[in-house]
Image (cartoon, rainbow, N blue to C red):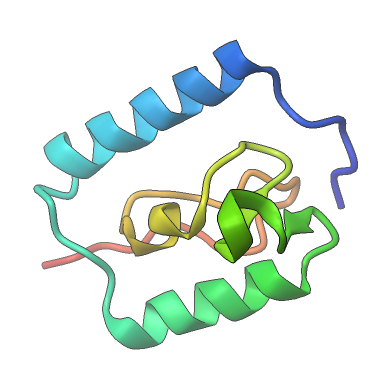
Length: 91
Protein backbone atom coordinates (compact mmCIF):
# COMPACT_ATOMS: atom_id res chain seq x y z
CA UNK A 1 0.00 0.00 0.00
CA UNK A 2 1.28 3.40 -1.00
CA UNK A 3 1.06 6.16 1.63
CA UNK A 4 2.93 8.94 -0.17
CA UNK A 5 1.83 12.53 0.28
CA UNK A 6 -0.80 13.96 -2.03
CA UNK A 7 0.46 15.14 -5.45
CA UNK A 8 0.96 18.84 -6.10
CA UNK A 9 -1.08 20.83 -8.62
CA UNK A 10 1.34 20.18 -11.50
CA UNK A 11 1.31 16.41 -10.85
CA UNK A 12 -2.51 16.46 -10.73
CA UNK A 13 -2.62 18.36 -14.04
CA UNK A 14 -0.28 15.81 -15.64
CA UNK A 15 -2.40 12.91 -14.34
CA UNK A 16 -5.59 14.52 -15.63
CA UNK A 17 -4.03 15.27 -19.02
CA UNK A 18 -2.79 11.69 -19.41
CA UNK A 19 -6.17 10.25 -18.34
CA UNK A 20 -8.03 12.51 -20.79
CA UNK A 21 -5.62 11.65 -23.62
CA UNK A 22 -5.89 7.91 -22.93
CA UNK A 23 -9.68 8.12 -22.75
CA UNK A 24 -9.93 9.88 -26.11
CA UNK A 25 -7.18 8.02 -28.00
CA UNK A 26 -7.02 4.55 -26.42
CA UNK A 27 -10.61 4.21 -25.21
CA UNK A 28 -12.28 6.25 -27.97
CA UNK A 29 -14.61 7.76 -25.34
CA UNK A 30 -15.91 4.33 -24.25
CA UNK A 31 -16.74 3.75 -20.60
CA UNK A 32 -16.35 0.61 -18.54
CA UNK A 33 -19.47 -1.52 -17.99
CA UNK A 34 -21.52 -0.55 -14.90
CA UNK A 35 -20.37 -3.62 -12.96
CA UNK A 36 -16.69 -2.73 -13.51
CA UNK A 37 -17.35 0.86 -12.41
CA UNK A 38 -19.09 -0.38 -9.24
CA UNK A 39 -16.24 -2.81 -8.51
CA UNK A 40 -13.62 -0.08 -8.93
CA UNK A 41 -15.69 2.34 -6.85
CA UNK A 42 -16.06 -0.13 -3.95
CA UNK A 43 -12.29 -0.74 -4.02
CA UNK A 44 -11.58 3.00 -3.92
CA UNK A 45 -14.11 3.68 -1.15
CA UNK A 46 -12.41 1.05 1.02
CA UNK A 47 -8.90 2.37 0.26
CA UNK A 48 -7.06 4.45 2.90
CA UNK A 49 -5.89 6.73 0.08
CA UNK A 50 -9.45 7.77 -0.82
CA UNK A 51 -10.72 11.13 0.47
CA UNK A 52 -14.50 10.75 0.66
CA UNK A 53 -15.13 14.42 1.49
CA UNK A 54 -13.24 15.92 -1.47
CA UNK A 55 -15.02 17.53 -4.42
CA UNK A 56 -18.15 18.24 -2.35
CA UNK A 57 -18.62 14.59 -1.40
CA UNK A 58 -17.70 13.07 -4.78
CA UNK A 59 -14.36 11.99 -3.38
CA UNK A 60 -10.86 11.80 -4.82
CA UNK A 61 -7.74 9.69 -4.77
CA UNK A 62 -4.97 11.16 -2.62
CA UNK A 63 -2.34 9.46 -4.79
CA UNK A 64 -3.27 10.91 -8.19
CA UNK A 65 -5.85 13.57 -7.32
CA UNK A 66 -8.52 12.12 -9.63
CA UNK A 67 -12.21 11.83 -8.85
CA UNK A 68 -14.60 9.00 -9.56
CA UNK A 69 -14.65 10.07 -13.24
CA UNK A 70 -11.40 8.15 -13.75
CA UNK A 71 -13.16 4.95 -12.69
CA UNK A 72 -15.23 5.12 -15.89
CA UNK A 73 -12.14 5.08 -18.14
CA UNK A 74 -11.21 1.58 -19.40
CA UNK A 75 -7.49 2.37 -19.77
CA UNK A 76 -7.09 3.91 -16.32
CA UNK A 77 -5.23 2.12 -13.55
CA UNK A 78 -5.17 2.52 -9.79
CA UNK A 79 -2.06 4.56 -8.85
CA UNK A 80 -1.35 2.51 -5.71
CA UNK A 81 1.63 0.15 -5.72
CA UNK A 82 0.61 -2.54 -6.41
CA UNK A 83 -2.52 -1.30 -8.20
CA UNK A 84 -5.80 -2.21 -6.56
CA UNK A 85 -7.49 -2.39 -10.00
CA UNK A 86 -6.18 -2.52 -13.56
CA UNK A 87 -7.12 -1.32 -17.06
CA UNK A 88 -9.58 -3.36 -19.06
CA UNK A 89 -10.03 -3.82 -22.77
CA UNK A 90 -13.25 -2.64 -24.39
CA UNK A 91 -14.04 -4.37 -27.65
